[in-house]
Image 1: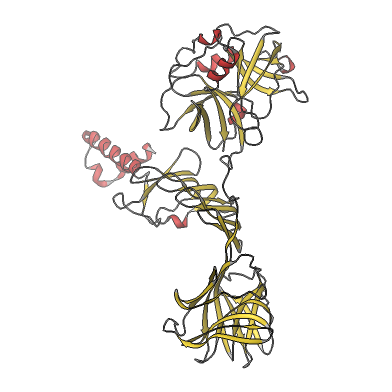
Image 2: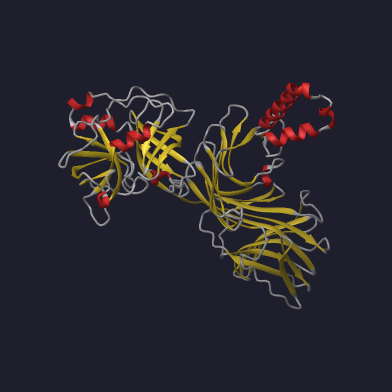
Length: 561
């Protein structure tokens, strides 16, 4: 890029006037342009995701070193606002971004705000979650190719679960009866359910949606068209048959509330005038039933309160009287306090983890040893560290690798990480282990599933000085290891680091391989800031239990995302 920029500058007529004796000015302009480009690496946005300058920005977005991967931070405080992959990042409006994979948004207090998943085409797919600022779950919605499932779950902060059904009539997913005749017609088109009556008898359409909670809300946005002022249109609910149902209807100026039970009509409101009804435009009708009362509102204003009555059936829909057309733009049914349960949407801490392994911290600056195959296919590496009984998570990156010997060195690269106290164990000075030597390992087998934390102890003996197929870079042990143990340290009976667990022997419950210490040391020597290997021998006089307690602070769980 530097050569191209220089060529463009030289070809500029104004710059040619500088002459050869002005090269210093040319270089100054070059560095100015490079600095300008660097300053543009941050894109600022307002709270609504629209492009902004730095002074008016609510957060800024930066590209990371990983392909198509971005992070955003709040301007005020610098906390994380977003992390994930954006296949097509829009610098003018974040709402036009094309996302992929799992993306996470955060509140300023660090709690998750939303976790959403996208397919390879940038369409929201799978289950998406939103949260209260307290960190407690709020909504859980399933998506298929960008289309939300009609029913989602919503949690109150006290744990009560509500079930929400919503139809925006983008298609007929919910199977409305769209038959047409010489008397009525129905169609889902243009984001509306359009219901037309050709006779004075009127028309209706409904779907079955059982309401299983004591509290519920039914809300609809409707528009009366081609109507005379006296034409009624609105909601029918709790519909069993035409002998048993409830209704909430409006005309151009009045509203009607009532029910029919065993064919007997009971009017609660018979044509009261409402100044809240908007003529010839959309109106929002809502029935809210909680406790012993039902509230009926028009465009957000309560019109009438009545004693709660039973729902005769499970059907909910729309009705229009006379020769007229009703357009329904939305229908929402919310079952309030559907049940009290532990929210299913509370994501496991490791919900986005593809695989795990183990590793060993061997320097105060946060270098970690593990197997290369543990981190080979990583998009993101997170190290979980046990320190003084506290669990801490740090981001890390591969800084050195030996593919042939299946070794890798990671470095913690996280602003929250502080240099450690001096390392309280030693590398074995003479790396060779004799057959029969007592050895043990600490690691995290099956950490995502049934076994969990903290690090697990397993011991055995050296079975052979060579590895699989007589490989000279490894030895064989009788330690039983499991998936997730790879990359864990091998210690001798004095608590000295003596090798790195590589894998188990296929088909055997009591055999594993470990990479010899000499090969590990060769890789460590390649680090640009390599210091002396840990040499603290204070563990040798301690009991096995005391050794394990101290060494566990240096054994980390590696989570691959």
